Image (tube, rainbow, N blue to C red; front, side):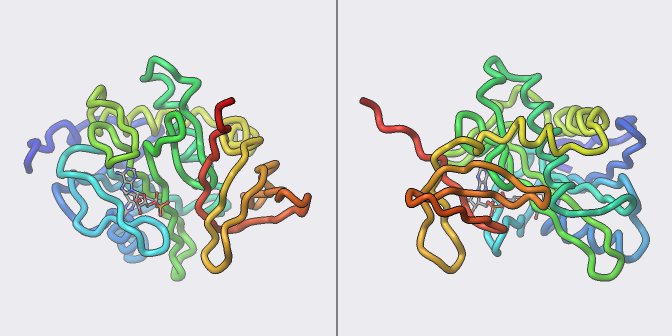
Length: 243
Ligand code: BT5
């Protein structure tokens, strides 16, 4: 194991989480989903790795990170309501809270709809949920740039080891109320912003993001005053032009 892996072993994790660590794998989301389905991982199991060779984003996109640089982890939720959209929101809120406690300008850390942790609008972390069609269990993966980020992204400059970042993330998750909807909206930097939304099969939508409904859908009012309710899409926070 490149970093010895020792920092992951023998720790006690918040709230009874059982964290396993491997040096390298394809995707922790794929592995943990398979483990949940074959019964070898249960509620509050986590799988972390130093390196993914096939890290997944949404829509077949890739999640990139050099070996050992960043937190790459998946969390299994096999009990409770198991709504993937709500679980993604919970993990996002916890990540924001954990990161805010580490940085000099916490007010710059927030969420970009639907699933990104951003620092001053640059992407620090991405979150991806997968649901087992066999058991209904949900796995939520997060890649959080502790040391490395691609051009245009953000990272924490190596201020924290990935294992310590995970401990803080799980600790923040434990502190959330049962319904994290209010906390999610509070941290959602997208609300009230002018946005450009790239949609999978339609021209870009430009308007103001006004709300998120209880299913996690984003409401955008376009420049003609029409409201659009979005399930999917890539949001760009449009910066006001100076002057
Ligand atoms: C996401 O997708 O943001 C979800 C990323 C989830 C990654 C975790 S890591 C552990 C677990 N196992 C997995 O296989 N996945 C999860 P999306 O919104 O589609 O964003 C993907 C896009 O983000 C890419 O197309 C790049 O443009 C950009 N990107 C890739 N790596 C990045 C990084 N390290 N930092 C910032 N942006 C990145």
